[in-house]
Length: 221
Image (cartoon, rainbow, N blue to C red; front, side):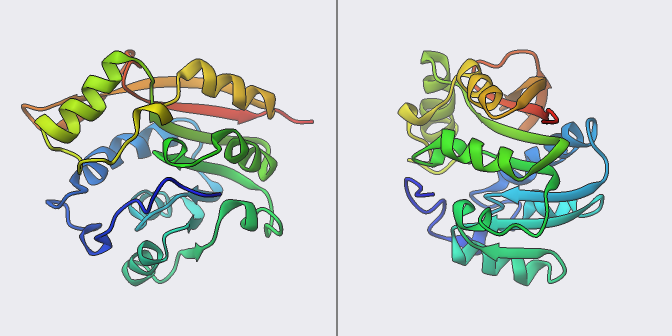
């Protein structure tokens, strides 16, 4: 499933908690807890796992597999944790012969980086076990998110590298919920994620205007 570009040209900084991707480390406990609020064990798949920050956190509770299209990041993930099943593979190739269905699938901050989000949602739904849970996080598409996620985050506060995001690829919650519903994924929970620049911290909120995370449950056939 083609992406707009490699997520990072400097994968060696992935596990540097003070480096350019410090936000992934800072937000990881929040995301992990949101997931554990809904499901606590089973077989899990992290789609677009990058260097494995979320995957490793979830591996304390789930039998995790992580896949990513960036070979450099998969190498970083494998070097950091040699127990987790990390694979350099596109999702559409992976779903052709999955070992089994997954109780948990996470796809965080990925949909806005692929050319066909609907196809990714469909593929994920196809390998989700009945009553299994799927989690997406992405960016809303509106003037506020443009100012917050691009102008402020990438240029003013510089908490993300410049050109990390393309506004046209942002996805409204209604669009995501509709696409997921078409694939048998029922909305369970949705929360906004807020950033406090004073304390450089993240928190859950009810405002989904910028960044949001969604939990879906696969309805049995």
